[in-house]
Image (cartoon, rainbow, N blue to C red; front, side, top):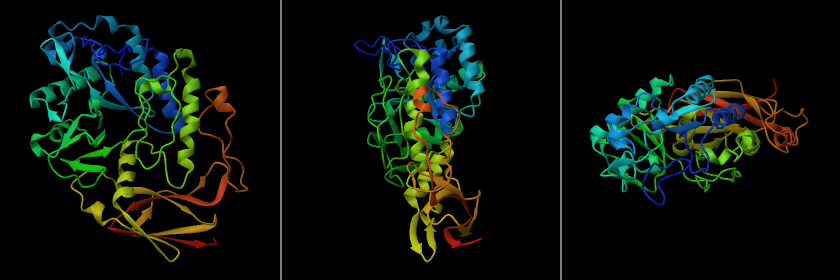
Amino acid sequence: MWAGGRDRTIPRREGPGRTGIARDHVLADYEALAALGRELGMRPQAAFVISEWDRENILRGIPTSTWMGEEWNNARWVGPWLDEAAEILRRNRDHIEMTVHGVGHEYWEDGGFTYSEFHLKGGFMRPKSEVIRHLEAFGEILEQNGLGPFPESFVPPSFIHSFGNGSEGIQEILKDFGIKFVSTTFHNLRRLGPAQNKRIAVECGVMLVDRGSVGIPWYEIESELRPVSGQPIYGVHWPNFLHTEPERNLEVVGRWVDGLLPYDHRLDTMLAPDTATCWTQFAHEALATMRPIEGGVEIDLARLRSMPESPIGHTFTVKVEAPRDVTWFVGGGTVASDPTPLEVPGGTGNDASTPKRGENLSEAHETAAEWDAVGGNHVIEIEAVGQRVVVRGRRGH
């Protein structure tokens, strides 16, 4: 979350990589972020680069964190707008998840920078003392703005990261700061030890997930949603759902809401309300095995239970297709919430149309097609208590 938008890393390395848009960010951009989460019923991760929120110029003491080094002066960005932006974030904690991205995104020394803040290219970690100093500064600046506590999630700058170095590696440091979840790409992850799964790695109690890519450029403004399948995270950047004219931001947000909500109404996908739920659901999808049995399914969780200590929870969601009058029974666990009908776009059920969540954002959002409920599809939230869960349905009441 930069205050400025213009990227200054290209063509000369004279400043940080920002969001890449040709204007500064304004309060309407923060309101757009909150509106996206509110309308989706989620807390999307907001990966913060926090240097331009430094009210007390503490970063002078960490010259590797900014392009100004020991001459750091953030006076340009400190003022009433910063108070108002912080208030938007505080007011919308239920709709925005503060996430660590970095202090300055890059690492400055000898008059220039190298990628990235916490690792060199190739996944070689910066000196441990520097990593700790940068993370401590992140927390201090959060507190300056009343935005604590320290986040539980981390997105590595430029997705340059490492895994497998145990107590000498970055996961041990992240754990000490209370970080549990890392979202990155595995194709450029430096591995010093084997991961537990091709898209999941757990170390020092921290869980890494391979986020994949949706192919939308990070600097593109007013982006259109692109269909995806088979990946746990729909990763975009702030400009993608903003407008060149900030007063029209909600038009773009409305299009994104209309494009993303149907994923919650399919049998094969869901919109997780927060990171912990997302990481847990993906772990169950990737590591559990399911086989059909008479009247239902058996779910084997043995591989999950054999994972190292991690933030993977015991509550997961199963979506099933069956007649609407089915009563569900769970062995080896409990139904964590009442089964609810799954509403699917274009369904053939005879129930009344289900209104979209939240308030309409734009004319485009108001005129979007309603969703009809489909008989037979249910969402069941299960809290497992062992390594084996059986889900059976019985018709009738």
